Image (cartoon, rainbow, N blue to C red; front, side, top):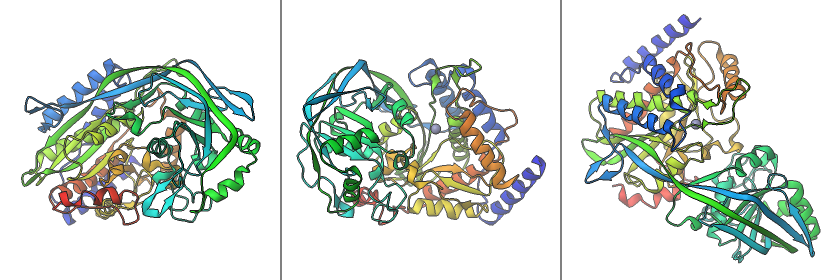
Length: 552
Ligand SMILES: [Zn+2]
């Protein structure tokens, strides 16, 4: 069976090469396998940022970039580029047990961290959070979207107050409206809601958890918010974080609304319209008191570059995160090393192999950057840091093509991207993939907001056309049944577990073929003078168009 798959692959690739892309260099599945094997070996300790594992990973990737023949593209030091970009990260923990309570009509109701409420440690630079009887204001979905003529705040004063907000965007429940129907726009994501709360000057925000619109249960919220929090070190952290950022359980919110003489479901219906106005929860306040332990750790993005011959200031970026979860709680077998072979040894190996392919080919007209970012697992922080302090201007960054957790098996007849989005870059990828007889399969669950959960997103948010490529599941050998079974097994048994380990029977032939497609997409962009953009109704179009004058 495997023989058959391989010969089919060879046939389709060679036909495509003859027809469309005679210069596509060879991508070697054995090298991909070797790189993944090394990066995910126990010696690399699960590649935790700012650990011994980081030191080994950074050294390995730099050695591969050097051997490939690409140039260092990182921080400038004494007029010379280094191989890395230093990424300072703020590490923040709540010291001890936080004191949290509502006061409802004069009566204090204490809240237990992780149970009724999940408060994340402050990332706005606070050393302590002390809120005494802060008023509560329900602000619907907390959306301010000028391009959609939508403003849930209507000028309300949130200074010293706590904004209470619904998760997802205003048309998630109805399925039709100005926010992509069921699919989640960025306005539906919790990160957006916290950022908007900071822009509105609130003292804090409570997001009401509901399983369907959040796309995950309370356990996920509690687990990921009550542990150590990280952010990039920002010049103005309070411009994107309020001191208090938290979720509350739906039942808690329903009771709170009821005690204020309000009906939760009726108010939610109102919040699904443009006419919605903020509602004060009368007679109710929120109090919080705890100290914050914080420090700065330094991790690194690894950056290789090939300078363009004609337009060196225009850049095509390939990205992938190198970090994984490091050493953690042991599994049933006592294994404590979270090797991260698929997540994201595969993407890092892909990035190295693309660097080799570009270095062997005639130099492109535009520059190509190979960006191996850190701290994805801590909240897309390496990519956020690069995008907030770009080494090459974002206005003249043509595109970011990201790779995360690729399939190490045989080839598929389809491909996907993380989440849903409308942009020329996806159209170009789809057209390129067609030359290899691959079809685009959209994300079957766009309401989960996967578009906002991978390293291309910090670029997208700032207007740079960006996508995260995903391997297909309709396998040449075994079809959808085999592809889906492998996906399901990975999610259930290996995803974010110590067993995400390199396997000797992984062929890497699917990845090798997909990388020819991604090479061609990036190479075509790097040898053209086109500027792909977002569709007219995209929430990222405005940010891109704002810098149009810098792209002549
Ligand atoms: Zn990943």
